[in-house]
Each structure stands twice: as C-alpha cells, then as structure tokens.
Length: 513
Ligand SMILES: [Cu+2]
Image 1 (cartoon, protein in one colour):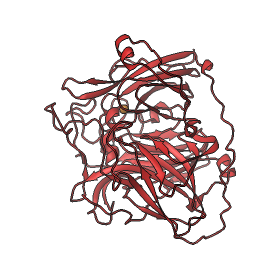
Image 2 (cartoon, helix red, strand yellow):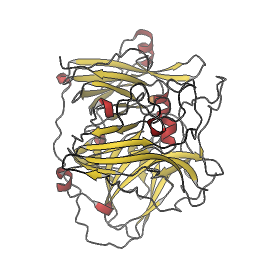
Image 3 (spheres, helix red, strand yellow):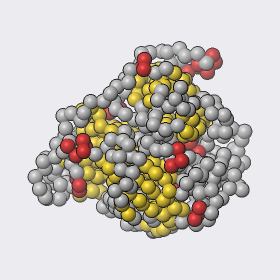
Image 4 (cartoon, helix red, strand yellow):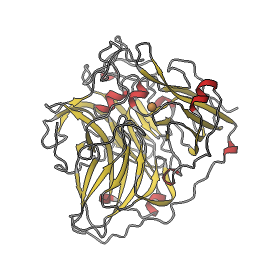
C-alpha cells in the first residue's frame, strides 16, 4: 500500500487526568478498548486497541515521589485482532485469547504492580493469570525526572498487544528538571516511533507465519516484525509545524523489532541531554542517534535560524540490525517532517544546559558477582529460530537471584547475528563496556577469548539506562545495583518477537545477605 508522506499533522497524546487526588496519592483509571482511528488521511479507519481507546495511550505526567495508583482495566473483545501462535509458551489454546497486563517500563515498581507476564487478566478481571495479585497497581515514582513508558506485557501475546496499540508515555517530573530551563510546555514534544503494515481496508497487517514457513504451524510466530510504514504518535509519516526556536523531543522506539538510526536531513545536530533513565552529565551534539526498541532519548533541536525550512527526520538502520536489509529511502528511511512555518510566539529563553548534574559512576570493583549470560540462537522442535538467554527457557528454574542491596555485573555474550536490546525490570544500570570476543571459540569451549579492547559506551549512553544494546560478536557488560524491592521480576530482550518466544527469564531479588 502506498501512502503519501507528510499529509497529517503529528498528534500529541493528551495528558490523562486522575479520577481523584488526595494529599496521599493520585488515582487513575485506564480502560483498554477496541476502537477505530484514522492513522493516515488516505487510509480507511484502522481498528486498534488503545488505553482509554487511544493509540498511543494518554500521557502520564507525575512528580517524583508522587504515589500513583492506576486501575488498569481490560474492556477488550474476546477475540484477538491478530494471529495467535498457540505453540508459544503461555499462549496455549486453553488460555483466553485476549489477556493483558501493564508494565511501566523503567519504573522502580513493587513486584505485585510490575506487570509480571503471568499476572495477566481478561475483560472485567473475569480470568486471571497465576501471578495476578491486585487490580490496582501502585507506582511510588521514587525516581528523578525521566521518560518511562507503559505497555502491555502479557505472556505469549506482548508482540501482538503492543502492535494493536497498547503503549503510551509516562513522564516523571522534578524540580531539578525545571531548574534546567529546557524547552517546555508546547515546546516539549513526545515522539513515539513505530513501524506498521496495513491491508487495503486499513486494518493492521501482521504476518501469520514467516515467509518460508517449514514448521507446518499456522499461525506461526515470526523471528522479527518489520513494517513498511513508519508512524509517529500513531500517524503515518506526519509533519509538525514548529516555531523558529528550540524544542525538546522525548523520543521512544516503541517498535516491535525495528531499530531507528536517526538523522536530520538539514545536517543539524541533535543535542542529546538524556537517556532511558535520566540526564547525561552534559549534553552531547550528535549527527545521528541509534535507538533500539524500548530505548528513549531526550534531545533538543534548535530551529532558531531555520525559518521557512522543511526538515526531514530520517532513519537508516537496517533490518535486522546491524546486518540486514537496507531501509527504503522513500518509505522506511523516512520518519517525519518538521516545518519551521509558525511565527515565533514569544522570545525563546530556554537553554541547552551546559551541565545537567553529576552522575555517581559505579566502579567495576563495587560488584561482588559477575554473571556471563549468553544470547544464543537455536532451533526449536519445529525447526524455527528461537533465541535464548543463557540457553535457558522461560520455564527453567530461576538462575539470576541477586540479593537486595547488592551490585552485580551482567555480561551479555552475544553469539548470534542480531543486536538485542536487553531490558532488566525494576533496576537502572550503567554500561561498562562492549568488548569483541571470539564467537566460534566461545561456542566450542564456553571460554571467553577477547579479540580486542573494551569499547566505552557511546557519549549518548553515559548515564543510567534500563535497556542496553548488545551487538553481535561483543560481550556487553553492565553494572546493576539491585534495590529497593525483593521479589520476582523479569529480564528480557525487547524485540517483542524474541521476548514472546523464550528470550525472557524470571529473576528473583532475595533478601539482603
Ligand atoms: Cu532479541
């Protein structure tokens, strides 16, 4: 299907209002609903699933330390919009087709509210998964200012539920952020990047089997979904009219599997000020930013001297990443357009701060435990590709069990050809290094033989993170302090087709030693 670019203005998801607010807590209700929405002016309306019937969902704006309660409710139909593979763990035929549970990505959340994949629930909470504990989730927001996002996390269905539309932004605000005098209000814009494909009737297209399906199973899970259309905030190739001034963009890669490597065709720099989990120590000016699924970047673009210009936000990340098909310059290579056509409404007094505050760096020797965890590609019993963590399945006994208050180094030993964005729930971490190693030798002997020096994280990664890219042929090491809760969480690849098919593991935070 050929859709014209830059026909629709960029929608900005509305900020959700609480049901009530007391001095002690703020209470929200959010209902997941099926509805129809226009995703492009020339495309018939698309049936989507949205939080509050919106795709993307409404944006949360909360304050550091604010106690937020959310009753997430499933008001979806009984039948799924998209093809379910019942051979995938947790999505067996006897399970309800439409199961949901919400995870606040990047949140320091108690286990009962973290959206454990087996804590799913159906319409009206009629059926509940084995780990379901409560109807109202609680978020303490004991975190500094940053961009989180909320999305579905139901076992065996996450790729389909998010594809159907179940994702939204969640910003934590604080006084430090306000003191930085960043572009704000109408000049702070969230950009949720995704790829999708459509049928002629406007409905969402998601393959019901891989191209060369030798497994005999239909529907069958695919290795990675890549769409032929790019959407921002739920619109296909939108445009945004801006004033000649600085804007702050909160960019999230919410795609199933596509990496975005973004540039501006004007040759301008992005001034990156933050990552997944807060500010960099100081902004970095960069031409290009690589954003894996679930990563966020906080950038300022200065349109001050660009009056009248049209600037295209482009993407050139191959699929799969890093070695795969090149993007099409006419379609997947284009994200959106900025038009500097609005008159300046007021003098731009916002700043790109020279400093955003020091980060307490964790030295490698502050860790007591170092785990090497392989990211491997195997074949399942039907001959399909399956990616595993440490060669273990979701159902295998828990093997990662740090103590509360401890610091560990996790080294992801990537022996396959994909770059995998690994996300650890509850915690934030720092990237120590990525170091090339001898993959063949490792596969034979399980011994690490490095083939080069460790590579420091990129300038735009030098802060706290919750998702880390683990390129092939490298051992990616992160250092993680485990707090403030004990209990069971998950860690996983955030390419949703991988996560849904065994590239996810439970982990347990034990009481302090
Ligand atoms: Cu993966």
